Image (tube, rainbow, N blue to C red; front, side, top):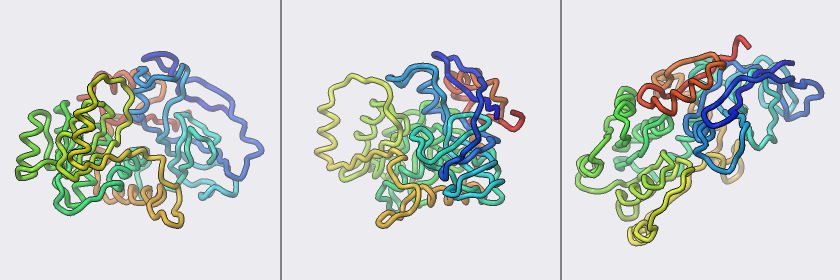
Length: 335
């Protein structure tokens, strides 16, 4: 069967290409899925689209936030033919999915009734945000600073706020601060960070600082703004080189007895296991409920739904017009 897919061909260049997908002799852990929507991950994908991430070569197939219907499946797949599912795969109209593919990871979950499939394409962003929150030792009334109000940053801040924390979202892009406020975040700040921290924390420092930018200088700032015995969560993936004297940073970690934790999402099991209640399936179900109940209004994050043929412009807009673009979703239903 024909499948159309997006590929990054060079720095800032992308296109829709076509290939044949062999749908025969499915293994027990495979499924043929017809994609309806897929969302651009503005962090991971832009790092590849504009060569911010080093160590790879073009062409590259980007993407991992997908919603589609199962056309055929092996017996080990935990969903039925015809089910609408969320799954991980690069952007494509038709996917032969398998649970052992290291790029696609192992996530395929049946979506709950009543969820908007466009909004459901953002679930992977929620899973990343939830990983950082769940890593934290959170207590009611903690002051939390979330540095970087991109999509994952806003979701992270809102989740901490729902746990009863006083949360400040920091971003130099004022439009992102305004969006976060429109979604219910009480405190945002685009300048004079220390002044805002002192005001919200009643003269103290942050109990928890979360970096969602992946920028080394911002991580160093997180360490500086965190109180003694506090926590620093590294939710963003560092991708760009940064030269600095690390001694002052390490000294602060040491002298303040800070806990610095990496928040990479792929370190927890997909399904619940003995000794690990925290798993992707549980977080997926929570994400569905947050969307369906409008506890987090995902629709406000989605800037536009577009034809995949406009992919190059979409990446350009996300890279250079951050004030006006957040989540962009591809509509594959006509492919």
